[in-house]
Image (cartoon, rainbow, N blue to C red; front, side, top):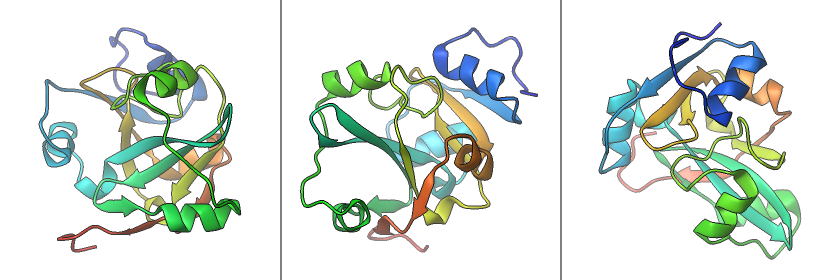
Length: 165
């Protein structure tokens, strides 16, 4: 189903292949900004998703998917989850939980299966997620991700300053 059968395996690529959905793997060199990453992967900033690990409590995490052209809203996520306390784990903790370094995190192939919450702006779009290693992206249909991971879809972002969306 994928379009990069020669791609060496990592847990993210193995998981997207096993999911049986259409996907492609985008490989690129170092990038200095979200805009450069989007261009390197052949998508718009709106379709390049940031995957954030958010801690609800000790050893209780969620993955949050937010379009690159939007700003994640702590206020909206706290309201959705019905809590006043959320935080971001440090890089080492995020890697321990997911198996991936920051900047490479994806719901595909995580070390720990985590609930996924996605911003409503991704519905119906073709998106690019982290691919489990730097310089690798997984390009997939957002609706496939929503279905596969039983994603909670909600308004959890705000328009980023200078953004036209």
